[in-house]
Image (tube, rainbow over all chains, first blue to last red; front, side, top):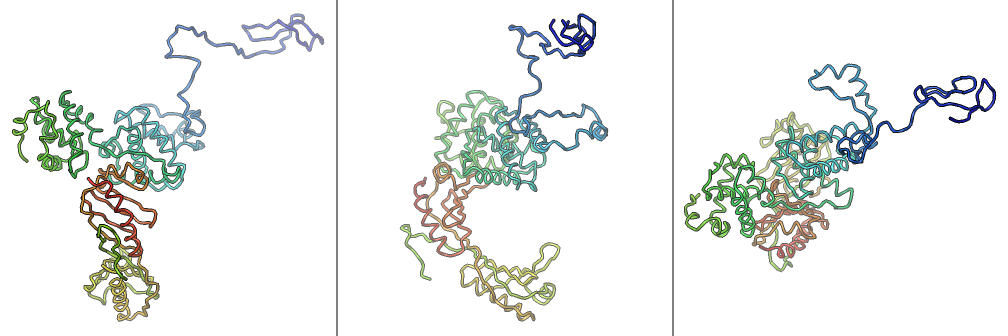
Length: 313
Length: 188
């Protein structure tokens, strides 16, 4: 209900708004002044006690500040089970027009997400890896590098920075095609680039055997007592002069602890599989640890006689 | 050049390898050189230079078609220059007008033993962490990139230290003098 100028009556007349048809009609002569008006009121009603899972007010995924437009663009996805020829059809061609400046970034983020999924990493680490990758990509000098190794190294650095380090071998296992050497080189490169960009802000502590203990032990299914004993043993072993990689020391300590416990003892092969350390290396590390075994293993876990029963290397 | 022993520990790094370059200032026919000398190898598909070795001083030279030559393996600066001159003489005898221009030592590698074990993890955590890289998974030694003089030191748990990237003998003497007190701090 309101007043508007009607072109037929040539004066201000009372105008009726018909909601059902969306027409603005002059009440004197019936002329339709405006049709197809767009209703801007709310489409649905939201109640206070309704579940928050499906809030219709919000659409799309969370905005990604790393992408140029905050991730607002639409992507035409390849449907499941479609053959390769689908992408060269008209829909596929529209998708790959290439006007999106972030396509490389989005692809990289997707790869990082796949890798971190396979390792079971939390979203914090994945986001940090994305951020690191973006910072490195901003400096154009990384064009010719092996992309897989670069992404794997970003993930490796992200894990380290969050104090949840993963061994390079573990990262290797989910990075398709990248070798330990390539990931190591890419990591050095990234650290240098980040250092150049922000003046030595890259903070990464050295790895310790204790960081990996929990994970290796649960991979082998050791009970809580054994896990605690192993962690204490590794702490104590740092005081001795054992010149081995921390992962090898961790594997050797696990071997000793499992040999001492009464439960099912994993073989060297099982430990090798869970830790990524070669069997020969575990044997050699065991030889290095053996002289100190009395001082390393906590006394509440194993008595002296049990330690004497340990096979001499 | 008198040996400098002003380091209180009395340890002096010993040179292991010197790399130097010299310009023979003439275009060379590598095939001719390879065919007419006994102690050389030339596989153009693998590497585009002749690899020549002499027994005294025991050194190896990479000789390129442009006339530039790289001489490696000598243990002192004088030996490196002498070896380079010997190689140039061989090229001369083969019929090329070789000269001896711009002899320059590019890299000196030295090593020494500080005689005590070093705590590398502690080292990397301190204020020197900005210059150090210690990745036990990748390499057992700590890589210390010294800014002044600009060279790289590889520091191992055993106490062995390798210094590389020096252009002059004094550089690595200074570097070792700088690093020794720091290492002593982290003695195990």
